[in-house]
Image 1 (cartoon, one colour):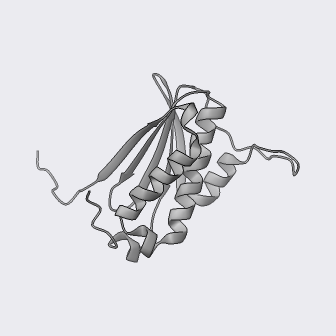
Image 2 (tube, rainbow, N blue to C red):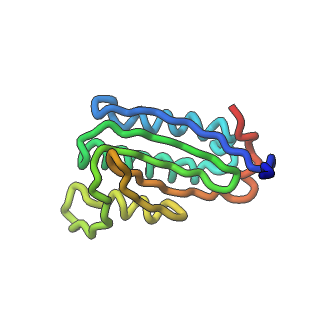
Length: 145
């Protein structure tokens, strides 16, 4: 079996207990995206990723009432943002009323990400959103830490 040495990926993972709050997830994500050079080359994308992280971690804390496992993986084409939680209930896009305080998280993720999917796993579920930066941002950082 031959290995393709051109395939490179970098990733980070963080456990976020309910008590940690979502700001920790946003700040942690923003710091890692800065190592890719995206704060300079794709600031709007960074804001979109951070907002999606906020929504996904909030869903894990509020709906699953569980610790969120946040994983960022950059494979030179797509930034995969995965949040794992302890609930097997898959998220749904809901149409929240104008006066509703919540219920828009997955609608936002759908609007911000290039793609997203959710699947059950033995101890809960994973929700993964994919963000593809503009071509000039892909080479903005070396992607290595």
